[in-house]
Image 1: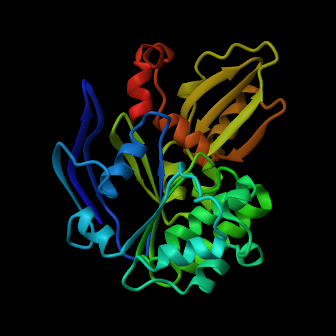
Image 2: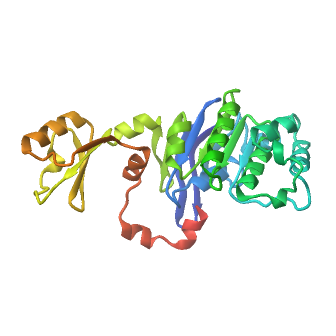
Image 3: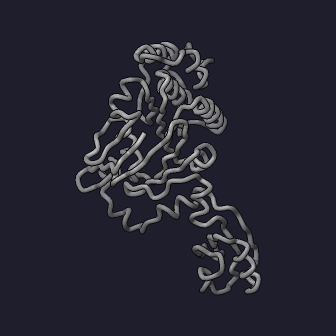
Length: 304
């Protein structure tokens, strides 16, 4: 799967702005971005729902349309309503029959955690169960690549854990997974690679651990207790510094050097050192002035 300088515009908005991306067979990749960053447009180009205005998108050496028609790609999108008055098993069976080499229906139901509700009507399920039906539909064609747009949005904690267990089983067969999510801890725990997109461009593409180290591996925080905060950003090992109320938070590449420097200043009141999370890294990579968000047209945000 590859994007080569792919561009997609909506009026004056460049929703995808020269994206270069290659994903190898068997990888599990998380696509992260703020609302309006270009994630949905990127996915639509990958699935052939939109055509790039410039550049190229290829799947298995062919166009997205060709790969999708051949059953090599499955997708689980946020939108979609089940067909009324059919059971879960009937729905998955119907979908499977449209593919040349489908996954056995019983196996698709088991992977999606639907075996116990296979005989129930698909339009009378809970939100979490309906989400699992969408997952089973994506699996029905036995795809080599599965694309998941916010796959666990309607699931509780237990169901989310079960979903990712199923996904790891699917990926372990040598299949490829691309998913977008707002649950950044899911990306950190389950993705081999994390791709961060902002304003239509890729701003990070690496393992979650390396991305966290790039923006500062640890957070050092302590109580200011009336002490002046000037010069904190120039301390050894500090990447950035901010003050939150009466507490300073330092993002550090070398937290040991930072703590030593703080001790020499006598500034270790209530000191804590924690590993930077993927959320912290994501916020740093996609930070922008608030006024810029306010100026963006609402219609453009909806499109991308």
